[in-house]
Length: 225
Image 1 (spheres, helix red, strand yellow):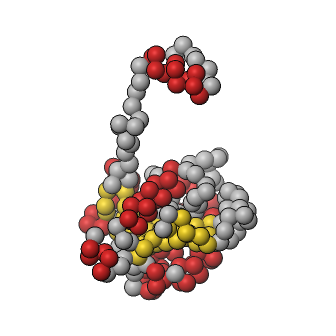
Image 2: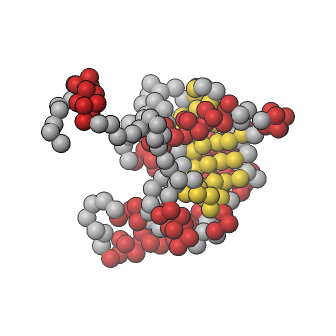
């Protein structure tokens, strides 16, 4: 800890949405960022301004949060429209971080890798789910794409991965994602596997009587199963 105070370290998290939006990724990054701040690390979060009332800049529990346009809710198009503003935010904040962690490899990962190479930073890519590197996330939902559309997708994913594979480190949250990394050509030496887990003291099965009492307290229907 003393070393961090003598030589301040800066970390930048790049993700699509953050507090006050609540989801698994946002909660994980918030908890991790709080811990890093407590160790003397300067933490910056670059994310999307989901709603107009969300301030473009604020400090939350010691975390510098930078929100970029567009403020159009959670519509999918916003993920693409935020790329250019996020790029400029990374440039403006470049003196505040040495490490940039993209918490989504689909699109934001390219920004993290390119900016890290340009400004001499260290890039880390963190996949939130399976399919981000091999591109299967594109065809997971909806009707199957046509032969020609699938061919175009494969070409675009291949070009994108030429950039992603130049990242300094890859963060994996499961053995399945680690396997996908290896199959996609990621060097084993660059993979850091930190699997997701739960606090078993806080989240644990309860007996039937306790379950009924909790359901009553929460106003839930007491089903027989």
